[in-house]
Length: 486
Image (cartoon, rainbow, N blue to C red):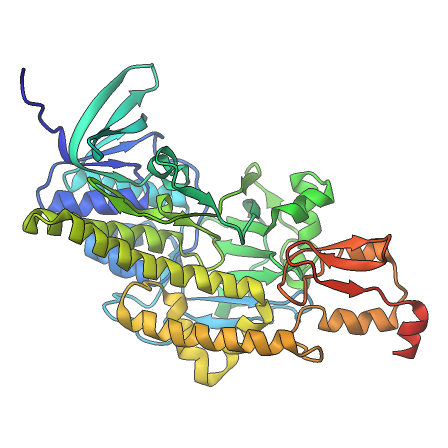
C-alpha cells in the first residue's frame, strides 16, 4: 500500500469573491491552493453595489488598482425616499462623511459583477492559486469525521477525488457542504423575492447624487427597489419584496415590475423612457441560516455561511472578510497545531459580524420609517453611517452598531405601542380610511403592513377585518358612518 498524498494544502469550492480572496491570501504566502469553480467566468450575478470597507480588502489583496482601472462608476453614498417624496428628494447618506481607517479612497463602486468577479478570480490565479473552471464539486469527502478532500466532476462525466489538509466551501448560495451535512435552515423571518434587470435610457438623478445607490420604498412591509448606475449608460433596476406578495398578484415578471415602479413617484419618473436590454433575472427563497461555519478540516465562507437580503449591499463585504479571516484561521492552525481553537475563533468572529448585518436588515424591515428617523438625527448619524460602511467584525464597529441597534429596538417598541405615532405602519392609512370611500378589494391590494410586527396583511371579507399572516393581529375595517364620525 502507498500513503495518499494531498493534491493541495487547501481546496476551495467556488471562485466568487470569497473563494478568490482566500485563494489570493493563501497563494501569496506560498501555500498550495486549488480553486474549483463550476461555471466559466465571466458569469452573470446580482449584486452590483459595494460598501466602503471592500476598498480595504481589495487593497490588502493587491487588486484595488486593477478594479479602479476598469472604470466602474464611483459610488460615494446611498440614498432613499418614500413613495410620495418630491421629485429627486432623498434622504442622503455620504458613506465617507466619517473617516474609515485604512481606507485608500473616498468612494467605492457600482460594478458589473461578472466583470469584477472575473478580475478577482484571475488575480487569485496570478497570485499563485491553481484555478480550475467548469469543474463541479459533487460532495466533500470525510474520513473519521474529518474533511479530507472533494469529489470533482467535469461536464463530460469525468470525475476524480482530490485531497487537501483543509476544504473550504465558498460555493455561494449553493451551500454545498452545509446542505451535505444537513445544516442549512430556511430563515423564518424572510421569504424574499427579487426581480431585476438592466435598462438604458433611465433618467439620472441630479449631479450631486450621481453614482449613489438609490433606493425606493414602495409602501410595502418588506418591499423596496434599487437603481444603480453602471458603465455605458446601463442601469441596474430591481425590486425586492415578500414572495407571498408577488404570488398573490398573479402577474408575470414584467407586469409585476411595472406595477411596483408605479408605487413610487421618483421610481416612475426615472423609468419613463427606460428600455430593458437584458432578460429578467429572478431570485427567490434565498434567505437561510447556518449555525456552524467550521469543523474538523473544513470552513464555510461568503454566502455559503449565510445570506439574508441585499438591502445594505453586504454580500461582497461578508465574502471578502470571511475569506480573509479564514486565511488567518487556517495559517494560525498550522502555526500552532491547534486547529480546533483557531477555527472556533473564526466561527465566533464571523458570527458576530454577520449577526450585526442581519440585525440591521431585520430592523429596517420591522419599520422602514425608523431607519430614516435615525439617519437624519445628528446624535445618531455617525453611528448609522459607520454601520453602513461595512466590516462589522472589529470591536469598534460592533460597539457602535450595538448602541445604535439597541436604541432602534427601544424606539420601535415605543412607536408600535403608541396608536397615534405617525411612524407606525398604517398611521396615514388610518387617516385616509376616514376620508375616502372604502373599497375592500382595492385596500387589500395596498399590501398594508401589520402595525404590530410589520408582516403581510390579508383581507378577511367574511369577518370584515384585516388579518396579519405573521402574528394574527387584526384591524377592523371602518364603516362609512365611522369614517364620517372620525
